Length: 427
Image (tube, rainbow, N blue to C red):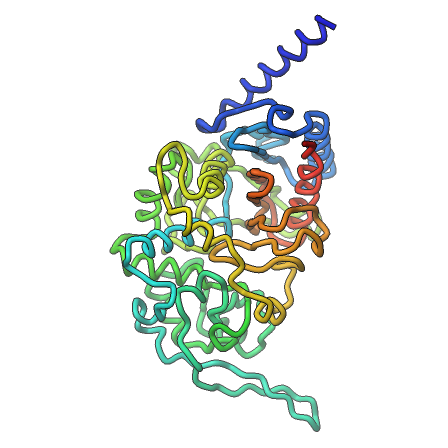
């Protein structure tokens, strides 16, 4: 018995030492924070198995509970071309996990008294005033769909941008045929355009919905980034570096990965295992034409864990306050309500049981969704395989990062991971 206790103690110290990469967040054994080591070991074996199947080259995952990191693993390969192993400090393209950064930045300006959530977007971006809405009309005789342009009933607001009820869309995703065609014709996008070009092109296309009438995932957070730039006088990247990344010691998060860190960038397979198509992800080692608030940043698991823990702590970490407690509560509450939640554009991006806050999907029901979770949990993910969730009820922060071809498989990967992590809660 004495020998068993000694071995357990030794293993505990080894585990804690291995967690020291987690950028100052305290560490603990899983059992000390109500998690099961054996069940977390299942998580590791699952990920190893998925890597062996060729689902993704490698992954980094972190689980913190009650403010302490209890699980932090790097598995598989960081670069399948060179065979370089995955490391805990690997840098990942975050894609839509950039959106929470931009949302927090906007709420900083709210707390500064420089913007109101009810402000029309055109107050800061005048070109987006007097937009029109494309409305589908079905001929009852032929069933043919035509589209008519009508004035907006009200202007889109800052709140609409943050909760994706602006009427803007992603041209590649929307089912609104006329708006999809208009986006393609005008070259509306987030990648490869300057901030001015992005707004000018959006000003020339119709909205897909009346502002505030429906939820559809969109370029709204990119436009929010343009608002932040107009108000602050800095680029979005500069604002985030000064007000968020530097104060939180998120030393590896930015819109540009410098030469000295490029070797740590996680890489996907050269070709997608399912389609056989060449995988092409955002090149974050080259300065982009704009700092895309909806998709453009890169960072590490440890950095995102610090950001997430700040939110779970009510807006502060290590005696550095980023937001007020009431502001975080406002952001992480559902802003769609029953009406908007029912008429959202059908999409697995916002599945059953979830509403949307100011930058995050918010779980409204413990049930309904097929993945185990708590009401009040908030989360989001990135198209290339990253995800995080924050569960206030369980006092838990989880960050998951892989790198691969954007598509439904990335959602399946993170949901499988989420389910096994939830099963490790034992107290």
